[in-house]
Image (cartoon, rainbow, N blue to C red; front, side, top):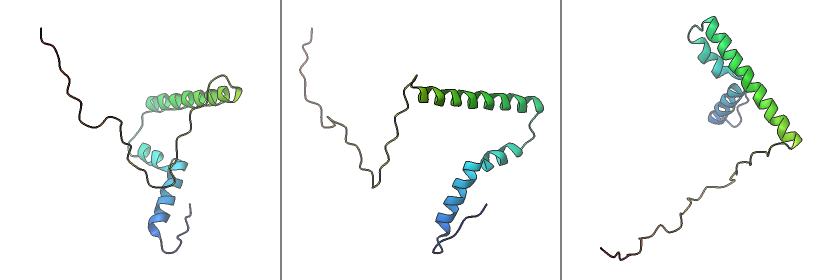
Length: 100
């Protein structure tokens, strides 16, 4: 795996490298190799991964065929995010209650 360092910007190159490694699944593989995995655990994990893959493929196919609605895309902000101000954040108005 290769990453080019531009303008001596090592931080950016490291970020790009980490993203590539994440996409390739290297971190997941390193974590799995830390300890021994019993054959029964391996079979269980592989079956669960296969089920997950099949469900994902079926969901994508259903979206393509129009059987289910596609998920809403997440909003991407180009600039700095502003804090959201909730309505009615001021002091609450005094209310009078009748005591019985």
